[in-house]
Figure 1 (cartoon, rainbow, N blue to C red):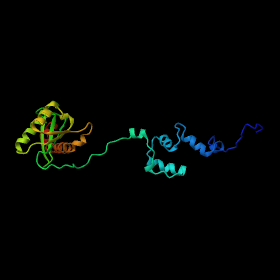
Figure 2: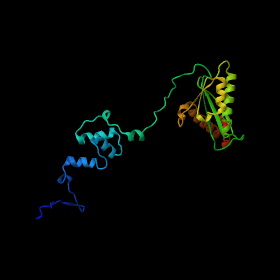
Figure 3: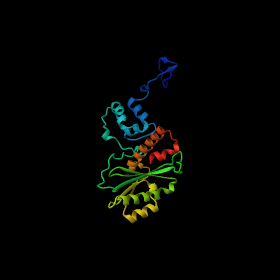
Figure 4: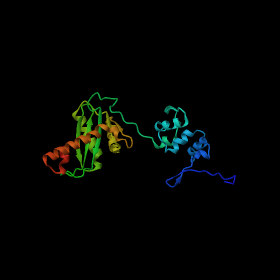
Length: 239
């Protein structure tokens, strides 16, 4: 071109497009930095790259970053990201076995309720309470009709167990927060029971009876199906 301020390039056409390499206009290193920092800026480009790729895990990010920048950043040297710490936090799994094993009957009792069931029993029950003595794995199951009956039913079961297993007394009761009522706390204080309730949204802490719910309901459904009985008889089979 006769105009010294105009640069004319000749490039082949491909699918009605003219592909012009960026290095004809910008230094490659500067172009790479510009692409990485188009929305974020900072002295260290690795955190910027991490953010640009949607906060990709550094185990997957570093195999891309190291060859591209000819660096050798290790996962243990990754920079801290506040946003990942907030958004990717999760609970650690609970231990599969308890660290404290009971030394006698009634030392550790786990209690939980199940329901409402889809169909009431002939006696009007839609719930059942499951108690488990962790010393000999004995189950105690009591059906009831309303959720408000749970605390009185649990207190009654513990009283019967203490009478039947004299001279042993209940020491610890593990349960969900639904048993954290004035009635139960007053009874526990009067007889020296230490209640241990699960934290919010962590029913896994009451795992022994949570697993037994499935065992009992599946076994009851199988027996009911074998006998050809209606769904209303499920609680009879479970108990």
